[in-house]
Image (tube, rainbow, N blue to C red; front, side):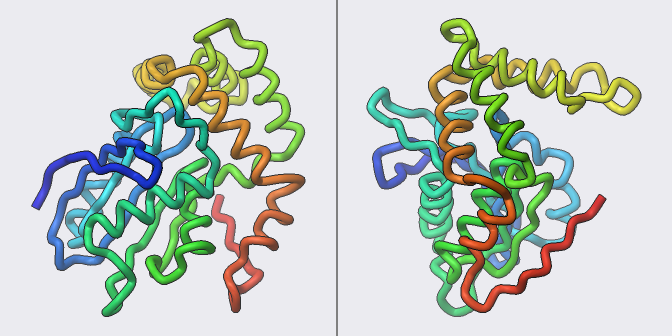
Length: 230
């Protein structure tokens, strides 16, 4: 079973999703990063399908094909996690009868995955958190916020991709020439207020450090050990 569609989140936000694979397979929800969209997972999906997973992907609010009304101002990780929980419920995943999902997130999406575990524990059987944004230090986040705030009108997406380039996200010896261009075009297509607000609200929510964030969002009975793979 495969295809795409839209559903309406709690505050009226229109969320675009795709799903593919056997519905009786283990559900896995894929969450992309800041100024990206679900197409980032295109290279992982064939393997996941070969393993029999039921794959559900979403564009976070204001990203990709998920549209927003002018009155929407909430883009923080808790709100994004609530959107993701609503999407799982939309697909009949309520945590009952052991019907729970693995959640895999990258960067901002990894923070959203972590929030799902903390706030909607009954829906999640496990997480994969890739290059998660809570490893960013407060000075770095503050620098990015400042870059976004001083960007020319409508140019926050450009400021975001300039930051990625300066931070070495696209090393010349390992990055195909088309990859930064593909990334840039998606970021530039986003509303500037969404680009800026999403990062600002994430930085404010994460607080003084990743360790402090993890300590205050660790589920009851959770372990302290958090493996970091290089």
